[in-house]
Length: 421
Image 1 (cartoon, rainbow, N blue to C red):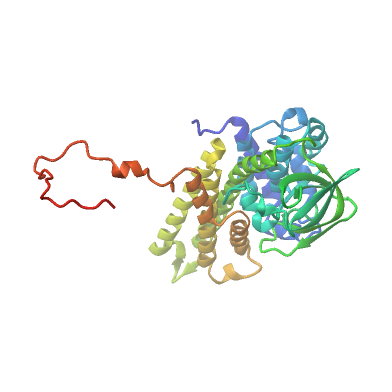
Image 2: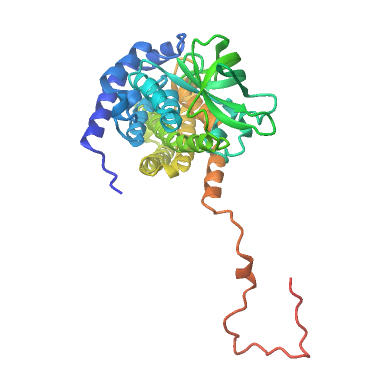
């Protein structure tokens, strides 16, 4: 493994850092999240034109940059450091990979160039509490019950002469209130033969009702989506008869890459929260000296530094090996939660005020853990997939020893034997 960054990657990170430094101060971020879109549209277009940010991991044949998901993760470390509110996660990390994996040649040619150029944004409409399961981060997604299980609830799909019709409701959809394209996970086939498939729904489709929801983390805007007999297109081949297995496999693969992106975002946010805290304790004086000079404060900051660097190493490793994405995400979310909490404590009274931005980092940590975690479930599922909880082979426990110690008495008819347990 070569952990060194290329010159192109360093240049991309430097350019992105300069742009975000000019347009993503605390006041600008707070103003952007209070718009109807939930983000700065002009900044999104600038990032799309100058850096091709939404198309970093999209192939060049579809108008993208043609880089790897690892490059997207490195870019998201920078966007995470400023808590950039944007459609980047929903569009580039969730929707675009699913279209590339499941879409027909015509669907890819139609949708991916618009997504890569930033002209079209997309969102994955999966019930918010089940998003981590749908992406196979905290449990297997194979049963498909997370989408409603074919019973009441979730979204149901019905085929008619003109195609497909969807009806149902999905809440807590990332960027669901403003995305121009929705990828809706819906059940089809009835209860007995239910299977989960993905459908394409345009943002202006008749019968589609959307509203922005109040969220814990304003920098992660979410929406409620209601589908009232909405016309939709199946993502992929219409005659696919795999029982939805390809859809679930694509969701799991997307989840591994999205976990890497989210881990990098969390590391960027944790690093920035730590830097701001170090700067504060250098300037804040108590008893005639900076509070950062006290040994207790130094120890707390040293522990945070180790935590953040460990999470950064895990995120970089996951960028090289996406199979470790869930573990890296667990490490990143834990580092962000601990660092943001300590930042509030070390900032003292101002850390709790609404005007200060320390609380934004803590809310990002809490909200991401609600959507994609919690941390202990991410680690438990990763351990289960690795086979750490597999039962031992009973034959190994009952196998007779190869030799008998010379001092052990030979069993005779007069020596009572223990019953086998």
